[in-house]
Length: 383
Image 1: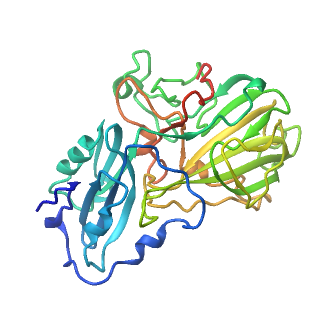
Image 2 (image 1 turned 90 degrees about the horizontal axis):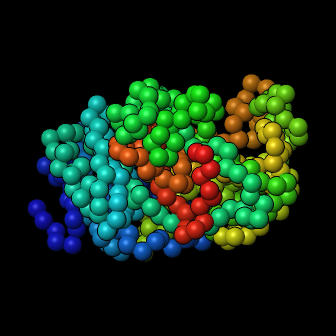
């Protein structure tokens, strides 16, 4: 079966249940459709991974942001489920994770344009329950989130070995790496002790002068702006017991006609001395949201900058992101569950190999991608 305007087609021979009836309600699973959106970077297309009861699956993509690959796959089926739907780079590098048979068969592909999508599709032949998670390596939407005049140094980055060890030498091409690295940076380098001691870090810590202006990294809606109690989170490890923090949700448009292919991210900023943004406010890239400080679980003035990926994670089409509000003793002391789907906005650029957090942390984890505009990325420092 062929369709000339589509580069990948459903594996219709594996489908169970005939294609008939109305479209399912899975498309409504995405988060809201009325918020202002960021324009997608040039050169993006749409992809869709769909399943049917009994292990049937389909995978398709279009090289534009108008045609609907999920609609094509679904036909008139009433039993289909959208497993993933989002953006991919038509003429640039993409990462693909293929999981079939509940994860007993996993394929990792990296390549230009449709090549890794096509390869993963071909390798899925003969398997059941296949789900394709795709991400462009780069999607530049973030501006610098602080006034560079206040920058001092970058302290800690994102750890890609969270909850498991990685053979950095064999898997990621780090010639000086170990075979059981507990900390891995964005270059695929082994940062395990004694190089570094802060394990499982899910963000970047950027040291700066007290009172440095902090800006919104991109257009978005402030989901929460608050000072939260951290006395149970880090007893004895603070100077100010109320941590200033802001969560901003960003929507990257997936094109016209439907919001199904929109991509969602949340940026998280912590340790403010003062917050000027308010919950529910829509902010633009570069808007002042507060001033750097050392409130909460902090030993000195810095910006803790985290990025959470809400769509097309390792295990979910749309991850159930929750900002916690009850910090009494015995409750979850994390500010949110974003650590489960945190990504590195610097992307993942190893000498060889594939992003381990995108698949080894399952059901947690997500593909990281480079999100910075030109010249906007904070310095990497020694990380």
